Amino acid sequence: MLSGVLIGESLRVGSELNSVPLQVTTVRRIEVGSAAAGQPGRWTLLDFQAAEADAERLAEAIAGCLEPGAWYVNYNTTTEAFVVFAGRVFRYPRGDAASRTQVQAYGRSVGVPEQQLDWED
Image (cartoon, rainbow, N blue to C red; front, side, top):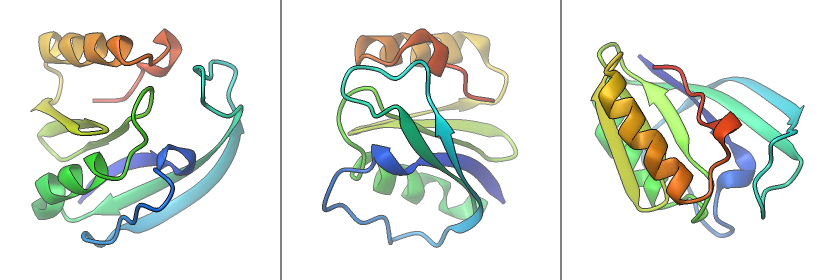
């Protein structure tokens, strides 16, 4: 199983994420002290799992549902980290520091605050 976190507020209004079955394991609401411009100060976090075989399809589906800008979804398979932005998918071997640095640079370029570039891989 792959596992990750989706921020409910990151989904584009009118989009549907329904092409890959997800198992939501936890739903949480948090206050965000590092919200970027255009992001609300409270987020709904959905911890999820899905079949590892669906990792690529899930990335493409999420990339089509996210609001452009400072939003991303991250999840991990046993061997790979996926970080998905609107219209852009990154994947790299877990623990690959150079690839992580490249993805973080992209995140900064679309407005993700430094404090939010903290995904687990």
